[in-house]
Length: 247
Image 1 (tube, rainbow, N blue to C red):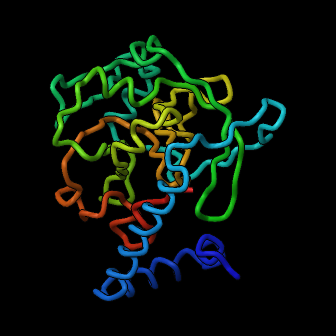
Image 2 (cartoon, rainbow, N blue to C red):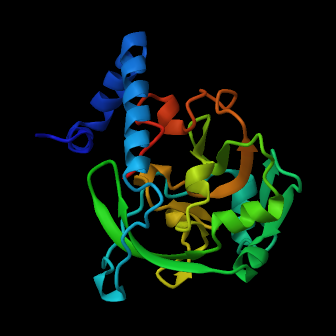
């Protein structure tokens, strides 16, 4: 049997997106996907949604770790920060929080760190094992004081596809998972631009497209409906992938 992941990997990108666009215009198809996604999320969490993703030994790390998604950013604000080594950059945390934050990279590095060697599983069909380091997202959210109405963490990124900015989101269940971190280092060195400098999300219980790169701002929200296409992420809005990508 061909898995959904294998089917996506085998399809040419243009054909996939064109097909997804046609199907996404069908209310029946959208309803089927959404009901299946809810079933997937419920079953995955019932059967071990709080479990840790497998962690590996240093000798098991991949010699080459491919770059996914955009590998460079044209945004002039980002380019100015990159030219300064992100010395003046700060992560914004706002929305449904008691204390909106602006955390420079030095503050994120000074927080308690988690280092984990995990496997990145791309929806396109490849995997790689790498080491990631950064503070747990739960610790950052604790500093901000998440309000009771918040249900989602929305990650606003510096990159874009044409005029459409890239963004992603996860619910608070995954945001508070101990392996969900804001990684500033990969394989013992600061992130390269191609891998998402200065900061990328690592949400290890989900497929790779959920691991947003070039994170500039985290917004806590009670609904995803008001963000861009309303589906919770760039690829989700395009109808290419499901919002929940648990593994």
